[in-house]
Image (cartoon, rainbow, N blue to C red):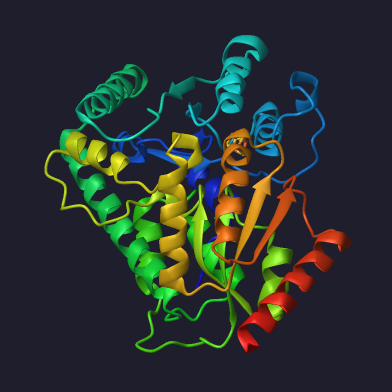
Length: 366
Ligand code: SF4
C-alpha cells in the first residue's frame, strides 16, 4: 500500500499550481471545496515545536489548537487559498477569531458553522442554507460554481464513503490484512489527498474472503485522533488489533449507511451530514453515543475499549465520564490515555498499556 507522504504530496500539488486550503477539524462540506478546484489540507496535529502560539493562547487549550496556530503562524507557502475553521468546538471558534481578527494572518479566513443536535425538518433546512451561503462566499474569490463539477465530485465523495464503509466492515470481521499503523495511515490519507488519488488507494486495499487474524486481542478505539505511531506499533507487537474505531478523524465522518447515488448535490450533502454517527462535537445525546458504542463492540467482538483523549478537549471530556461508567457497568475492560500529541510514548503509559493488554489476555483465556 503506497501512500504518499503528506508534506511531499502537498508541496508537489502547490508546485503544480493547485489551490490548497488549510482546514481545521473536523466537519465541512469538502465536496464544495473540490468543486471550486480547492484541495483541502486538513490540519489536526502538525509536528514541530510550539514556539509562538503560546503567546496567543491560554494555558488550558487543547494541543490541536496550539499546534494548528503554530503551523498557521509559520505561514506555510503550500497554503495558498486561505484557512477554513469549522465550528467544531468553542476552542476552534475562538481560534478563528484570533486568526481572523486579532493576529491578522495575511490569508483569507473562512468559517463554517456546523449545526449541533439531530435531524429534523428545521435543522435540515438550516444546514441547506449554510452550505448555500458558504458556496456564495467561495464564489466571491473563486468564481461561479460549476454545478456539473459539483455533481461529479459528490459522486466521487459517495464512492469514497462507500469504500470506507466496506473497509471498516472488513476490519470488524478481520478480513483486512493491515497492521494498526497501516490501517490508520490509510484512514488519515483522506485528510490531504485529492479525491481521485484517495479513491484509487482505497480501491487497491485487499479485502480477504476469510478472517486473517482472529486470535489477537481486539480493541475498540474512541477519541479525536488515533494514538501516535509508536503506540500503534507497540500494540501491533503485543498482538493487539484495533478492530473498530470511533474517532472524529475517522468513522465519525463517514455516514452510518451508504446514501443513494446523489442526484441534487445540495440535498445529497445535507442528507449526508445528518447520517453521520453520533459525536461529542455535534452534541449528540449521551444515550445515543453509548448505544452506538455498545453496538460497535458487539459487532467487532472487541475485548476492550481504548479511549485516546486529547488533553483539554472539552467536547470529549464532557462525554467521557458517562461513557466510561456505562461501558464498565456492561463489563468492558477500559483504558484511557491522555495525549498532548507529543511524539512517542511515556514510560508510564507504556506500563499501563502492557498491564491492560495482559488483563485482556487473561480475559480471553478464561
Ligand atoms: S481536540 Fe477537542 S477541543 Fe481541541 S479542537 Fe478538537 S474538538 Fe476542539
